[in-house]
Length: 325
Ligand code: AQP
Image (tube, rainbow, N blue to C red; front, side):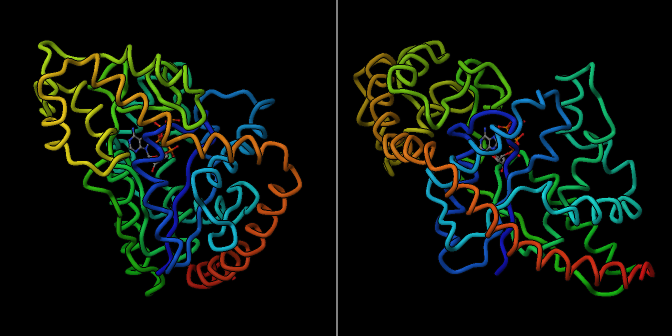
């Protein structure tokens, strides 16, 4: 099966990006053809500093590898280096009803968050995302829950394209985990953890142990003192229980039993230790890769060449079907 997914280099990757997306990419590499890209063309739809972008891209590649992606297996590359993404994006624009884009939750949220920069790229984001997947004839897209609506649009557009121009694409399925698909902010557990929010709200993959501990100890919890999983009544503690459970393999029920007579303080201290230990190999690998510039460039070069072959084939077919060749 061909699997496609990507992450924007908008800031450092956090534990939500890992638990919702990257963690499921790792086993998929074994028996599938995986295409994992750095979504820099998406990252420029929100305010950014051009001087920092190349560095952010490099850090995202390092994060991919440190978290377990294998460049020998997966195709890893930078989206903007393959111009066929934008080309297919434009072609798909011509079959995408504008109303579909205006109702997208992410567009509405980001328009509120970046009021001074509601650009056309922000609205068109899901069409480019559709192009990212269809360009490689992706059959499944492993993502977090926030992307569900965008995958639904991919399915609609691939159906529309096939009806209008003849069978070309299969409808990509979303792969969204039951647990961990929406890790919440540490400072406001009613909101999704987002890398472009306040750093205190995120556990970044490469945060130093004392930073992780500080963030977890000051994470917002709920009234009462019992460690109980109840998303409606105790969103803060439930979010921390989810993280604990996903990193240890213990169920939330087991964790409730383990912390029955202990308060939030003991639970948070124990969680901090779990997170620090889990991320320790990631930090080690990141430090090693940060000095291996040539190796990182080589990964991207190889990935680019493998991706380009598929992308050019698809664009040729699409343009022929649309009467452009
Ligand atoms: N909080 C989350 N819990 C689980 N999964 C998440 N993802 C993002 N946040 C969470 C998943 O991570 C992948 C990366 O997404 P992206 O960088 O393309 O954009 P995003 O979804 O908008 O991620 P962020 O962290 O919120 O970034 P910013 O702040 O730049 O918008 C996707 O698979 C996403 O579902």
